[in-house]
Image (cartoon, rainbow, N blue to C red; front, side, top):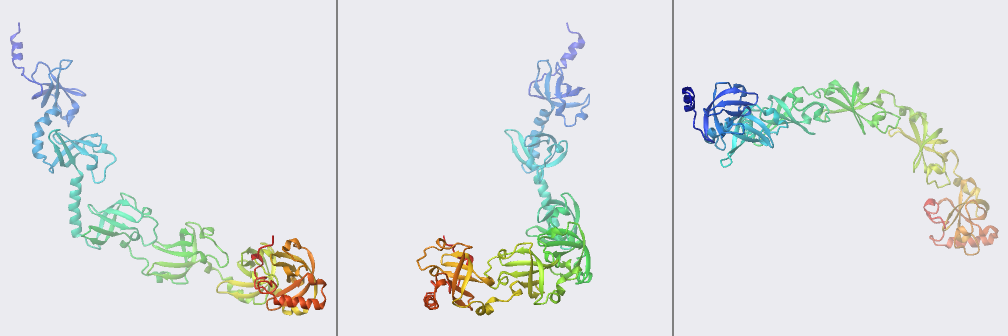
Length: 556
């Protein structure tokens, strides 16, 4: 039989059912769960993780719980404080959290795609709606309380979607409007570097972004904004322009300082010797910093009077301290021209006096080009022998026919051009022109000896004395018809020939091998035949026979 005390206790047990919300008393707080007395025959268990503030759960405190199961395998009642709060608060939350309404909540956990926020019930906050820029570390928001905007409620599924970003954007929009209304050019504002691009940086002015263009960062040359700025950096900037319609603000940094170019002519007069540091090397020159914000350019042509410098990096180094002379100033374009060679005397100043026209000189061949040879007369001063000034008699198509690099040659000074730093030389002028007195050397009818120097389809060239070439037309080789020159003559072959024509104006000599044994009368008759030939047939008189020896096709 039951004692009176047991009967009284049993009479106080509540009649409860699964799904009900009842009040319970905390009788024990364990590491992961809370033991709750709901007046039933056995106690219930609530996971400690369901409490927003686990530390505030104390023995003896009363809480609302929802009965999920009256008895599990261990005979314990399964309870949920969280579901009780959700069920109890859902209607209240619906009233408060109309779509578009605002609510405060605490971030509970990170889930796939966003965060779970407790606003009295659990709500979902997509990561894209957390801030203006989606944060990478969502875990840092867990445990923090924020204001949110309710963007969607699904009553059937009993879920709520929140946005913190929309509230932030709305606040920024209000701030932006207020800033645009009060901001005027000339204001100095505090801001934070938000983003850096190749052309500038975007500065957050506490709700309004402004553009700080790279050209407004420094009075000096700047390669990239990252050279002086970094994301997150705080700085004071000057408002240059405000466009309220487009909500655009242009900012400046260099405008906080005086423009160093205002008095540039006074600081660096033309002709002044200055010191500076090489800050940039480019193919066409070197930029030299004279003071912060002021740079000058030493063009590659101003590095040396005499040396041919291909690129500035051959003689200068980055950060090298150098001296230079101011050559020119353009304050409007903020440009200063500098020269290094002006620190020394120009060797070309005395070149005209030292190398007068007609002076014989000697030098080493420094370089060969298609049109001539450069001969070094002294360090830094070269003279050029054009191919047309290498021989009185020979048609020189390339200087390599007469010399090679490193050879020491003699020549005569023909012209000195100090302005363009050029000296024209001639090698043929060392001797006399044999064609000036050709009639004393050769006469029509003379029998001459020579070597075949070149074969062409129309005839053969024969080298004579005084470096003069004569031409034997194919018709003048033999009494018999000759189809191909190479069948009867070879380069280097010694031949005897008769001079049948001399053209002093055209500097040409016509020879005839078959006439070597002719009598005077026969020679005269042969000459009549040659004179009667058409221009295309008479290769002795042909305009280009001597002018383009290398252009003719060698007989096969």
